[in-house]
Structure formats: C-alpha cells, structure tokens
Image (cartoon, rainbow, N blue to C red):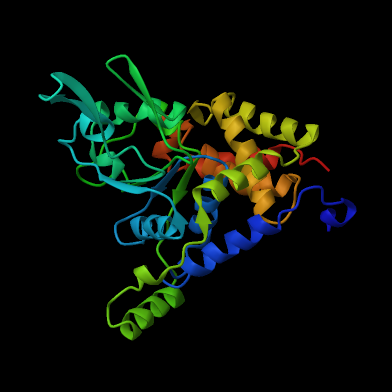
Length: 325
C-alpha cells in the first residue's frame, strides 16, 4: 500500500517487461527455483557476482546457462578442478616467433557472463586468480592491465563443503560475491512436474528455442536505472544497523564488512526496481539481507557445533532491530 503515496519518478516499464520476459523464457525449462532466478536477475541488475550452492542435480548450472541464453552477450564456462592453474583462468603470455616477442592470450575469464562450475573444487592458488577480476573487472599480467568487457558477471556454482574433494573458499573471495544462493531440493509437486516435462520432451531440453531478451547495451542501461533508485536516510541507517550488529554478535567469530552494507543497498535497489518501485522499502532490505550476508559472516565453533546457521543469526539480528516506518 505504501507505493500509492508516492509519485513514480523513474519509468521502470522497460526493466519490468524485460525481467518478466526472461523469467518466462527460463520457465520453459526450469520448474520452480523462483528465488534462485529472482536473485540471479537482481545480481545482474546490481552488477554483482553470484555464488550458487546446492547438491548436484538441482539445476544450478542449467539455470545459469539458460540466463545467458536469454542475453545477447559473450558467455564463457570454466570447469574448476584441483589441477587448474591461475593462467588457465586469466590467460598467459605466448611467444610469437614472427615478431619475436610475447603476446598475452586471453583466458576464458574474458567475457560478459562467466559460469564457473564447481568453483570450490580448485585450491586457493587458483582462487587467487579471481580476486582482481571480480573486484576491479580487470586482469594484470606482467605489468599490463587488461579490462573486461561490460557488463561483466561471474556466476559460480559449488557443492556443499562437506562433500569429498571440495575446499572452503577464502573469506576475501567470498566477500566479492554479492549473493550466496542456497538451492533446495524441489518439492514433491515440482518434481512430478519435472518428470512429466521430461516425459513429454522425450528427454531433450529445448535450450536452443529460448529467445534473446536483452543486449549488452540494454543491460548496462538497466543497471544505470537501478543505480538511480532512491534510498532514504532511514533505509541507509537500517542497513548500517543490521551489518554493524554482525560485528558485535556473540554467535559470530567474523562479522560483515562495509562491502556487505553496499551490497545490501545495491541489491535492495535492484529488488525495488524489479517490483516496480523507484524507491527502497524495508521489505526489500529484508528480502536480500540473508543472501548478501550469509557467506560473509562466520559462526563461532560453539554455535556451529550446536547446529546454528548463519541464516538463523541474521534472522535474530533483523528481528531485534526496529523496522523504519
């Protein structure tokens, strides 16, 4: 009801129409997983990187690939393995005998939408190759800086860390992901729909039949629209109080960084725009605060042994802070 008291200052019709088209296209193949798709789109609009965690077979990789299919951009996929080297990701100098000098050959990280599959199957040495490119959208090699094409977005999938052959990602890298999306198993009804659709399609997915909805220029235009969303002072204070509370919570060994506050703000703006508003309300903040913070805070060993999750702590914090009116 709150929206009725405000005059719309920004035309969001293009953004809303395009987002609905993308959802419709991906919905041709993916059943359920509405939150994952919603957050993937919000991450794209907010110029953030996405980490998707779930057991094998819940359509993490497929959803990311389908999103790229609806965008007229350069899509690259990198499969992370224990023997992958940093140069396999960012590129390497190659000697050119014709000109008798080394030339830098771009690695697969050079693209618009980069899908990194099973990111936590590579050790810390390989993870370090992503630090600069995820934060600054550039790669430095032998003193020369190479910038990424825009828009630039990393979508990484990972298996739960308890599984064999996985590594915990460094905290500095986790902090560079705007969202961590936890993908659950489908419900019974959804699984029945999945089986029926596979039966009807004779086992072939119509991936090639997805229509392109957005160009690279249109994505940049929508990203600028999101930056222009309005967040009042009381919203900024609400975000700051939530993030600050993570640094003084007895259940947490490590609190959230200032980058987290910025992430909550930009993600809230994207969600507000997707819901047809050019201003942020507390519900937008509460919708994004768990996926923005859950991977940036660390529980104390005692709380971890008790079975408490970071989502539980975030919920406890948000319920203890007065919601602005």
